[in-house]
Image (cartoon, rainbow, N blue to C red):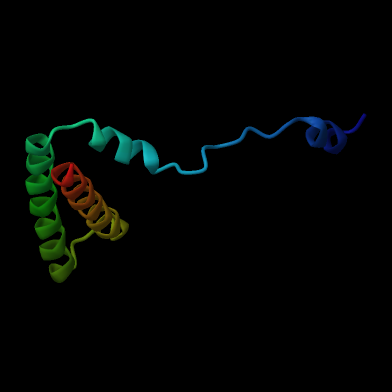
Length: 84
């Protein structure tokens, strides 16, 4: 039996459909006060990254996008908790 045939017969491991949902679930478990503290830290880091980007010293530009999304996720979860 050749390698290709044996690889095809092996079942691929399935990854979770929503890999980012675990992060949101972790945030939902926190209180509003904790979320506010995380939000302040995230906004401070975003400011620092924007300053680095302006001076050309930013090593990982993708971090800007992920941090903006994390901030939006925190805002969403906070507003959901306050509405309940």
